[in-house]
Amino acid sequence: MRSPLLLSLFLAVSAPAFAQMPPIPTAERPFAIIRQDPGLDRIVDVGTKPEIWGTGYGLTEGPLWVDEGKDGYLLFSDLISNAIYKRTRDGKLSLFLDKAGYSGDDIMHAGFQTKRGRMNVLLIGPNGVTMDKEGRIIWCASPDRAVMRLEKDGTRTVIADRYEGKRLGGPNDVVIAKDGAIWFTDSSTGMRDGGKNPTREIPFNGVYRVKDGKVQLVVSDKDIPNEWVNGITFSPDGKYLYLNFGFTRVDRYEVHPDGTVGEPQRFITGEGSDGMKVDTLGNLYTTTGALPGEVRITSPEGKRLGTIQLPIINKEPKEQICATNVAFGDPDGKGLYITACQRIYHLRLKVAGVRAKAAR
Image (tube, rainbow, N blue to C red; front, side, top):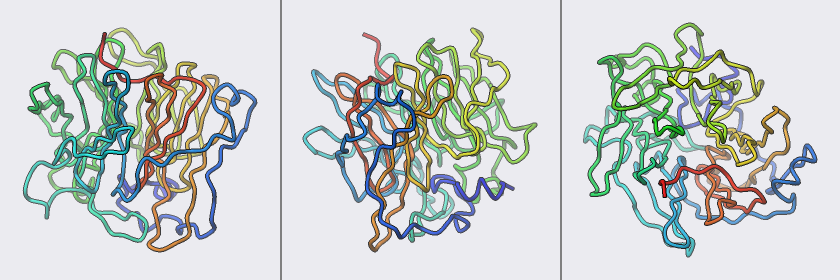
């Protein structure tokens, strides 16, 4: 059982009791950048306006900027459409990868049923997306309970779907470490009914590292009841791991050369968080998941610098107000892309972000 606070903040991406979410806001709220510390001035001007990079999607997640020539394009996953889409700067949207979350045919027993706004939906698609040093796309196929890789010839390779012979529950987010190892979070949200699903084989949620084909458990909730894992990222130098552990806090861990981590240090407490990224200055960008639809910027010292508030639009059908994840992009890395359920936002920053890129 998850705590009431966890359920109240729980994102549609993984909410078995979404009915306990707070009511959808009715008051209009414009886009705003809230300055909470002078340090925000190095990052973004409070008057910066966003650009909408599309609307009408199902439930967007896993943004990834891919360089191409002198420009590039954005990839993002859609948990309802079961697809990874490609969007170019000139507005062209195309299907990049179909059946990227659930590749089977038994849809009656796959995916995770929840709500998005007023709508009852089935989350059947992929979640976190990244890129390895060779430029291959790696993503979390949560309903397939696997981490996948797209090869250069278009074939798909299973990177991890088991730990010690037992099937994963549903990979959620993924990141590449400095040494090329793949780190990912796993919980029971890849299965219909979550932890109550009789096909669940691993009785805990965890963080795993894949190196040279070996799947290594790094962090788990075995000894911490009611906790689970979600967003994951590293500091720019790779010395620290940031992890959402329980949707009530963000912890930071020192990363050891052998792929293990030290004891968790509380970095942010008292608020929910979903996808996370860092900029080149070491600032951490956390997303609220479901309500209230914000991106929060915190310094490496743990000081809150500012908050990006996404708009609330009071019309029917009600939109899901959320911020599920972020990615840095554009040729200079200073574009911030925010996946926001039905929408994607883009705004320009003064600082570049840390991006998953192919080695040159």
